[in-house]
Length: 131
Image 1 (tube, helix red, strand yellow):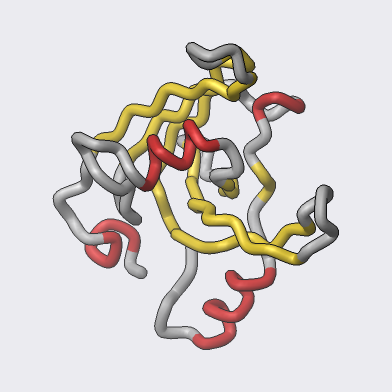
Image 2: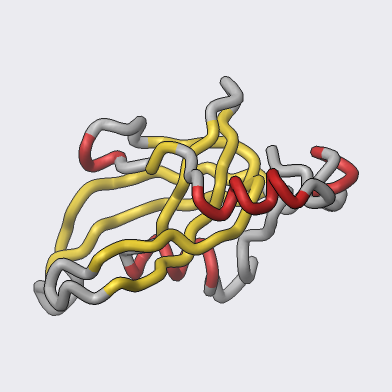
């Protein structure tokens, strides 16, 4: 949990990320928790060796473990940032993200599949979590 009034904690949160949620390589296939932060994670594009940024959410699960959920896959990015009905997931919202594995699009391209459920929090993150 980041105290946004503490400059040390704000800077720490920008360089120290929670464990990455990677269900295809051993993380739980379903992550349920509260969104605690919206950030960007730096990474190196393996195809171009270019340094880039990827949108990510911080999610605290029911056991209190913090996870970084990076939206590298288009389906997950659309579910979290551009859903046509519920809009963007916000800090303070409760989410369930389930990785359904790899599949094919209608035209035969490979795709990582996800299901996302969101309970919008009517309280602000400050009211709920003190930040």
